[in-house]
Amino acid sequence: MPEPLRILANRAEVRRAVRRLGTELTEAYPNGVVLIAVLKGSLIFLADLCREIRVPVEVDFLAISTYEPDTGRVRIVKDLDRDISGRAVVLVEDIVDTGLTLGFLQAELTRREPASLAVCTLADKVARRILPTPIAFRGFEVPDVFVIGYGLDFAGRYRNLDLIAGGDLDVLTADPDAYVSHFYRGTARA
Ligand code: IMP
View 1 (cartoon, rainbow, N blue to C red):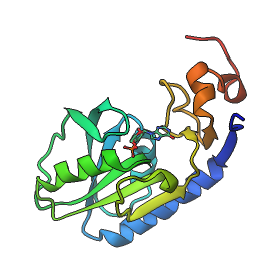
View 2: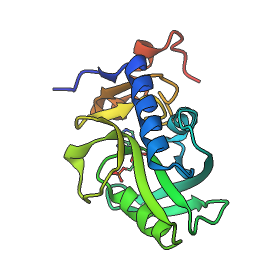
View 3: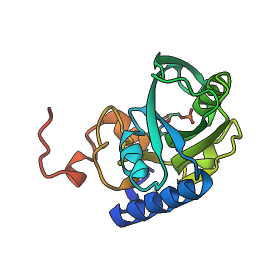
């Protein structure tokens, strides 16, 4: 049975969660924080999150490419612009699934000797975790479905939804545009 499309968090719920995380980060880092986002999925979350933080924030970006899915074997294709040694750093993720990517990134960033390193994720798919990883700041725990929206994509689609929804990976694999007509007015393919 294909998993029906379901809304996991609507626009208001996403906004509330981002505000709450902003408050938590403000309290945790009174002297300011460096937010590191992993492109491209974390971009929208980062943009809203940093504006909910009431202490000085710097942002930097990493881009990675996966060698093989579900192995944690990733390669940095765009590195940070700044040195993070001695800085309070928060790695901002769109979603933590198996945790393997996060494990790689944490090891890589730890080598650069930040004063502290914590993780903030919009969505946490706890049921799929292979590598247990402490997550200090979490937006939503999500079920084991394929999550789209608010930065999260399937084959480049759905990033610009202002909600997060869970779909069926088999449905999306068969047709990446399967949910387009549900969410968008225009259904023409680019
Ligand atoms: P992990 O290494 O399995 O924790 O997952 C790493 C990456 O896979 C995430 O940062 C996402 O980019 C992508 N990913 C995992 N699950 C989903 C999902 O449900 N929707 C969209 N992207 C996902």
